[in-house]
Length: 328
Image 1: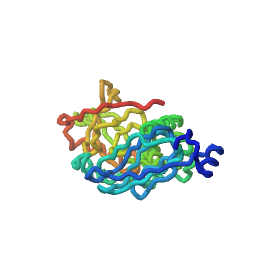
Image 2: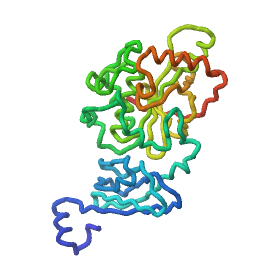
Image 3: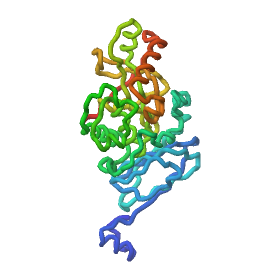
Image 4: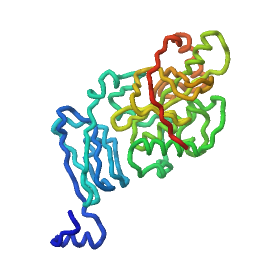
């Protein structure tokens, strides 16, 4: 509606005088000739979404003011319809793009691996025994922004306001997110990943913890060298139409081209042994540490020993990833 029109209805005049936007809506029809798993909509001005059909794409719940919104989590068949209503009558839909279904993302990529069904990300919105959040208001400062990398980066920044300390692995498999949200103290990468994954789920992102062994440590173990066990814990997060990999302790993340079915990857930075990059081999994945069978540091080190005895560290082929980094 143009504000320059002289003839307006009484209801419209009241709305204009009171400063309340009239609101608008649009129905989108999937005409891609294949199922879609989401839609990205760009508006000509910043708006607030007032309603949409959650039965179609249930994961996203945009509540903030923005000019771009993404919806995902369900599956819309060709010809299927999806309606969005918004607050500002002066804004118009500038562009939109359907997010292709998992078949177009590569059926071989999103398969079941490490016990995780990557083709069904909504399964990993549910919290585990360790990751329940009894007081969700503790996360209120993280709400109210569009779903995307900016919000995931805000979670990383927020998490790094916690106090850190070393417990020698004593908290592995024993910490709960409820406890950590009260103490605001984190000991090591297991605690970081545990809280990050739980908070991501609370904000509507499917998330999986990834427990790994350091490949250089595996090599040294196989040579008979002794010393501390070296590994790291990452978090996989489903963002709109793909799984991404996040180091919730240090900040690097892979946004494009990450395949969660590949058990090995390299992260820049050198880690425990220096050099330009550090290799990691995946041992376990799950909602939380207990979910993949680890309840103590002793159980974890036994699992690492078992893995190191049977993998061929020298034969590993690392995928090429472009790492970006969240900042604190």
